[in-house]
Image (cartoon, rainbow, N blue to C red; front, side, top):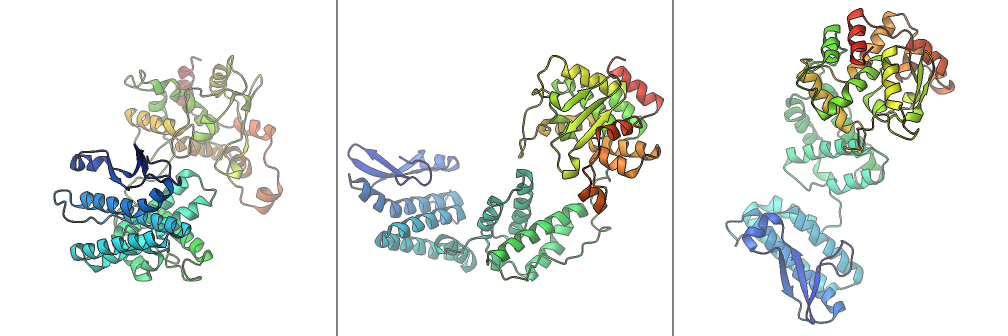
Amino acid sequence: MATKKGNPDQYLQKVGGTFYARVRVPRTLEKFTGQTHIRRSLGTSSRSEANLKKHAVVARIKLELAHLRSKPPKADEPGLTFEDARAIREQLDQLQAIGDHETQSTVEMVTLDHAEQLERLYGHDKARRWYRTATSSDETLTQLMERWLGGSDYRESTKYGHRKALKEVLSFMGKEDAYPNDITLNTVIAYIDKDLTQRGLAHSTIRDRLVSLGGFWGWMASRNAVPKGANPWAGHRISKKQNAGTRPPKRAFTDDELLALLNGNDRVKSWPTYSYIPDLMLLGLFTGAREDELCSLLVGDVETHNDHSVIRIKDSKTKAGIRWVAVADPVPMAVLKRRMHKKAESAQLFHELTPGGLDDKLSASSVKAFGRYRRVCGVPDGTDFHSFRRNVVTVLEAARVDQVATARFVGHKVGTLAADVYSQGGTKESAVETAHRVTYGDKVVAAARALVGL
């Protein structure tokens, strides 16, 4: 019976005293085969002999399934799937490793026969690429991408972005399993001019795609997968005006929008997520901390004093984000006091949240919840939770707070060698001093106080 990949008995099943090759039928094809597995006798009771014979039989079964997948109504025509080609490549590698050249030759003959049928159906180019995938030891761009990401320290969300950038290029080319030499400068230019810049993407998104692909190409050059010094993704200039995107620019909340958020909406007060949204908003409004920074706080990260509280941000997206933040207004202090009540220091401040998303972030659900809440309250796009951060920076600038103190408070680089390299960062005392300058208009303050019962 099939076991985990890498097991020497993969695809084997013993019934009575005879071994069978057994291959799982994809669910989408079960209605055509009438069974969940295809089983073929190997005519032996010897496990070692069965393992030698199974490769050719499994290859034939997979090709039969490929032909069903591509043209299910016409079972006499073979299919063109690179998944099957990759499976054949793995079998050939296994046969090469164990030195079974006879069976290896049989599988290669079956593969060539199938490629010739594909050529009659789909043309020379597609059949050639399928055959190359099945028999060549060269790595495809997709395989190289996985090797690059597998050896990196990128977060899962960043890896997702890199994979997406490559997938879009392959989709444009119509080549699922393209190789590095399939990407020429002319291919890149055509993709940028006819696809990437024509989809209404923001300029920053287009730039990120090109940076991602350029970084991938640089890594491949370091592994001799492509020539060094010839990166086709480098040096392209994209018009900011032409590719400004369709989304409104990000900005701070207006006072009216803050009032709409703080006063809430009767439609959302029964939502389970409403239990934490007001508290999260109020802490964002007075600290300017990033949403995930607040969601990740533990009770032990907060120090309470008579007229202020100090928060240690230990988990941030940047080095500058590791800092002290303080609150001096009674509103956020009331939120912290209530959320810390009778909790252990190791407990989450926002106990309602659970890890989620590609990076298992505690903010995964709150990002979506706040977005829904904001829209129901009538606050338009162009704003998000990060807008609270913009509000804090705006009020500190209006209060003529020093730019270094503001940067330390919100976790930005200061921009000088002395401050960003030599300095040990801000202190608790400076954070408290800055917190006293975070103030809002009377209406906003009244709405915030009403929200916590002050």
